[in-house]
Length: 317
Image (cartoon, rainbow, N blue to C red):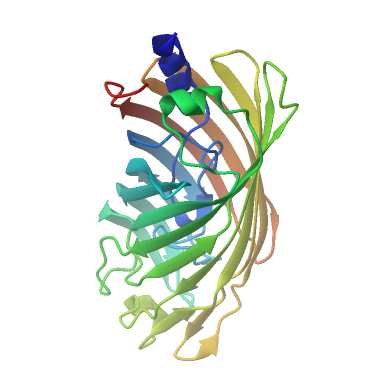
């Protein structure tokens, strides 16, 4: 019986788990749900973006036309702090970007190419309400319920050179704080509907060496507020599908103290689906785009994700 419950619990982890990617694109579905403690995981992704946002940040550049390919890879571990669920994460983000940008002086910079690392992060989650620290057996018996967590991420800069017109990194730090929550609908149903919501805010340090095309000594981005939501349904025991929505507001840039006309006010949406291939391996795919927004904001996303998990079950009772 215990062996069956352990397999069932690992299945739940894979069906209900994904972790993070780029600043502007969000975490994706099933990233904010409770999991058991004592689980190691690896979540590699491929993300293709066609957009007018800079690769390593949420900075909107209306005249940009960029194609970005990144491979964010997140290591994570779940544990308990007292009776509360906790998770620690680290993400490394190699990739490349190509495209064009036109400067404020109407100077075109074409055939741009940047490679190396986009911004990555260190992250930490802590359960606040309905998020107990459960081992695999306890988690397998746990009835789905509302959960609320605190979430902090420190984004560090990727590859950057101010003499380049295009960079994968942002040359600054980003401090992100939010309150992810998950809500099961039809708790007793065999195939539940899950609603996830993540309100967050990001603060940014100053870039003291902005790209030469800005003609500025320093660049500062105002705080950005966002709300990410997902609605996913288990069609079978191994297959789920859902709808994704993400709203962002704020984030205008100041160059040498002068506010630029690039405030973000956008609503994005998309579709996602996931499947469990093996007890320790699942995958998902997403398509998303900006549905409406100011300042001609544009972004199209394709995301493929795999999740590998490992849990030591020797000492479970």
